[in-house]
Image (tube, rainbow, N blue to C red; front, side, top):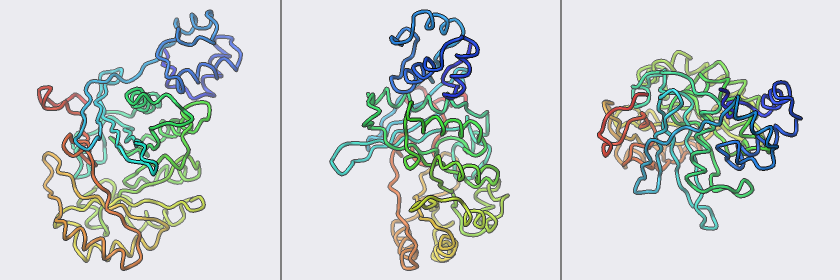
Length: 360
């Protein structure tokens, strides 16, 4: 059966017209039921004819990821372990923040692959290895699960405000499905997310980078984590196959909208990349690109040979950047106590459920 969540709106229109003989407007109705009203069965689609609903139920279905576990951190961060239709498992995270009017808003960290092929030495997902790419429906299904959990049923004023492709996997290695997901996210007939509220993070994949920029569908973040090619090759051996200077040259020509900047993510590893010499070299690199820096204090990951830097070293690192007029912010890490922070996702069942490793 066809999972309708795996169809873009133009694909759904073409299929319903060509296969079911329905008028084009019917596909728009179904699409809105799927993404705005979050319908999980065809009988809920009350403005769609009974005949059409019956035919849809015979050839198609609506498959959301199954929620296996939900964990909540002391800081309010919520992590979901989700099972896909073939039994593979991924994680997605909801991160809370307060808006200026005191209303709680949420950012969702989305996965784009089951596991990851990049093998970054500090990342739990990288230690899993790569299983497969996720489909558009599986990627966006994470958003439906989160909105249902939050009771977020108002597309005109959602509490889920921002999406970051910073979960499991390298988005640009699943470019086709990620681009289809971004186009669907931008649709005003569906989830209706503005591109300025979506960020796609890459550790440095040359193929697809330009296509993402020219699409204008999301902002770009680049996981840098080292200011020299040699150190980057130690920490991120596969990402470093694209030489650092070549990557920076590509980023200098990356298509940016007015006031848009590239975000560089830099994970501070105690005694590894957090020294004054690293900060000075990083300032040189960052100053060559229209961007800003997010400094992330390392979150301990099982089996990784790293430690978090001291608060004093973090402050000194930040000050060196600011003195060189580089915009740098230490990003507060959330969800560490449930292994939901940056670099900790690995699709494992929590210890309260037996502590076993999930098949992901």
